[in-house]
Image 1 (cartoon, rainbow, N blue to C red):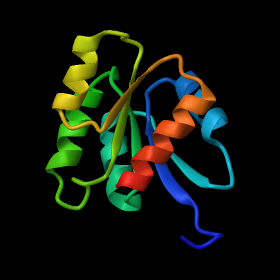
Image 2 (cartoon, one colour):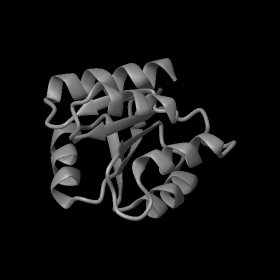
Image 3 (cartoon, rainbow, N blue to C red):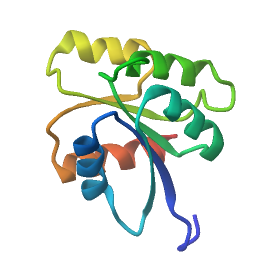
Image 4 (cartoon, rainbow, N blue to C red):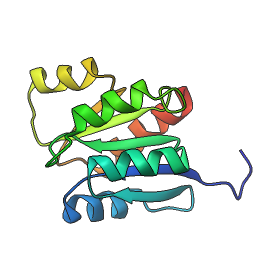
Length: 127
């Protein structure tokens, strides 16, 4: 990776507060952040920018994060893109469901900067 090249992250979350929080936690010279407000918009944006990582909320109206994750995995050009799902459910069953639909990692809200950065870096490096 060249010094000027930024890592593209796509954040898909219907709540502006969550998008703003993630922006504040991830904003750096290292990442270029893109946002989508719903599942359909997230799929469209992923197709156009081919992000290095998708950070995907589970609970969204219309198309939820599980369905978005399934569709990303079914798309040949995006199937290998790492997906981190975020959820307010601190429940092992919910976490397992995220992994079952194809997520690479699951993080529960609220999260701290150090943990979030470590997980993002791990997913990008192992991709």
